[in-house]
Structures are given as C-alpha cells and as structure tokens.
Image (tube, rainbow, N blue to C red; front, side):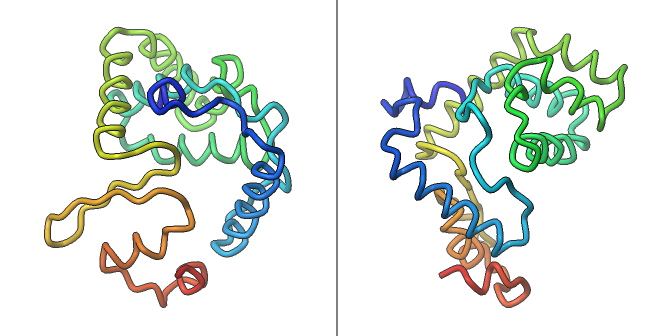
Amino acid sequence: MTGNGSTTGACKSMGHSDKKDYLGQQRRRWAKCFSVPILEGFPQGFPFRTLPVQRALCAISQKAPKKLPPVIRAIFHAVWVEGNTAIGEPDGFTPVIESVLGKQETQEITSAMNDQQIKALLTANTNRSFDSGAFGLPWFECTNLNGETEGFWGVDHLGQVADYLGLDRALARGFRAAL
C-alpha cells in the first residue's frame, strides 16, 4: 500500500517505544500460533522504503501471475526470517525475485516495474484498498459464499476472517487459538 502515511495521516515511524515492543510481542505470538518462522526482533532499520518492491510485485502480477505467491513468500522470508531490509531497493530484492523467477524473467520484471502501466496499477490497487476501508497492513478484503464483502485489519482478526468465509477453524491450531 503505497502512500499509506500521506493518505491516512499515519506517521512513518513505529511511534512510541512501548507500541513497537507490544507489536513485536504480538507478532511473535501469532507467528508461533500459526507456525510461521520469524525474527525475534524487528529487522534492522524497520520500517523501510517499499515502493520499488511493490512496483516489482505489480509487474509480476501482470507478467507472471502464477509466480506471484512464491515470490511473496521469498520476500517475506528475506525480510522477516533473514532480516534483509535491503529488500526495499532493487539491489536488495532482485536476487530474491531471481531465486524464484530466474535471471531472464527477473530482468523483464525489473525493466517493467518503471512502466507507467505498472505505476498506475500500484496506484489503482492502493486506491482500491483505501476505498475498501484499509488503513494499514495486513488488510484482508474477503468475499463470503453469499457474495458479501467485508474488510478485516490485523492478524489478530484471522479468526473472524475464517468465520466470515465459513472456514473450519478446528483444522489448524492457530485458528483454534484465534477468538
């Protein structure tokens, strides 16, 4: 979500040190609950610039959509398991994307990420998020079996997401723990 701070008025920093400590603790609790590997602390220099990598992801969504989920997993792993905050810049994320797409396809992506069409797509995606009520990440826009759509903010609302979508929460320990 590009422009979150300027659109919502949120500041770029984590703000009060107690907030950062609390969010770190919550992040570790939820990661443990859902068996997601994650750093003990925040990556050095977090939060960091994400506009270039967001454009690269938009380019992948257009040029290699089936490879978008594994690229997102690789970027998550690089940032939240390895602590790679260089991921915010092309020199940092290009090797990560290349590990999934290969050299040639990654070169096509890094060339395309500055195309006006890709920039416009990121802007449209961001505006769509804000229009749906998003004000931060993670934001889940869910459509249930009745065709109704609602938004949910925060990993602590995954239980509500599962209920809204009619998923069986008994299948995973993490969902059983979610209220």
